[in-house]
Length: 440
Image 1 (cartoon, one colour):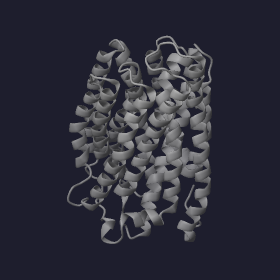
Image 2 (spheres, helix red, strand yellow; image 1 turned 180 degrees about the vertical axis):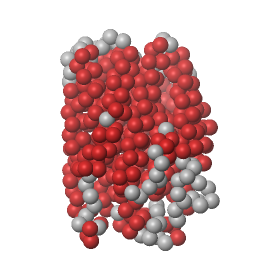
Image 3 (cartoon, helix red, strand yellow; image 1 turned 90 degrees about the horizontal axis):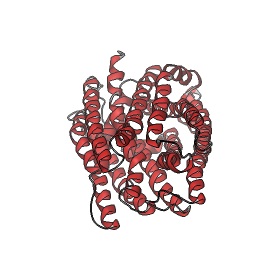
Image 4 (cartoon, helix red, strand yellow; image 1 turned 90 degrees about the vertical axis):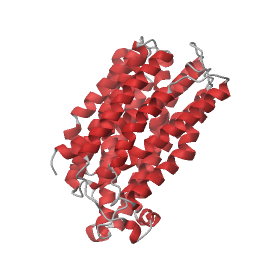
């Protein structure tokens, strides 16, 4: 497989990560501090579209892209996303009027359209990546490019976007200008990914031989991976949603949005530089073992940042570098594992593939878990800690509540993920007894 192919395909991850990170990191803060909506209500307005609608869209896009794969290539949906994603992103930060309930309803409706468009391009993008090659060493290289551009997407959505907001006043104007700039970046990235996916192989639809739920039922290692990743994303979502609050209220950093931008640049630079090493580590020790080890050190990095001393930029930036190194390990190994399991299932069943459906489950699980942790859970815990929306000064219980949500929730979730991945070894042995299990 030529090197340019996974690299150009991977550019789509810039759009996916930017499109995911902006609402995950900024929307709850925008709703509570600028629109004056309470954390619990704001969290509910964000979570309900993801829970009740986004998963349905993911399944529909995945199943339909499998069924009509021969007549309607998945890559065409990347162009649809390039056209629609900018509109939804800009609309999300057009401030509504009215009372608290009316504002929350407005955001919920716009966010419903937003997550629908996200499904249209995020599910086929991941499916294409899983089908580019069935060679294990090349799979880790494909996902290495994905993780590299994921880091660049984080740099855009969680680094450049907050900088733009603060640069233009941290008010409504700042959010609107940010959304326009980010919309252009997302569109360009999806167009480039479309161009890099033009030689993705056409595989036969498994629908002619067995149902998609049967493919899920027989693939026990995949189900363990899905559950482990779901648990991990709940914790990561909680950390993302409370990060801005952590910088403003707990760490009390000067120019918190600037500090956040510098932190993200450090984190993502480390992630991009370490990718060649991570590919070798994953190939050497296996994706399962690498995921488990990465989850431990990732939890430690979040605890360092969340419980660090107030006002210390040195501690905060040091934790940011550690976070970049460890977060990349979990993402690289998880998505390498996904590609391996999809390819192995297809190989064991005559070359047929349910990549679209299995990828849609993974994307849906990621988004629901991230939203569950980042809006419903974080918003509820913030309210329980005594956080008051719109206030520039918070009580000590609210401040320590922010720190504990950020530091401890991911650690608990990662412990659950490690336990699930440890148990998955038995499922892997059962799935491939003639070869002594699946590597890693």
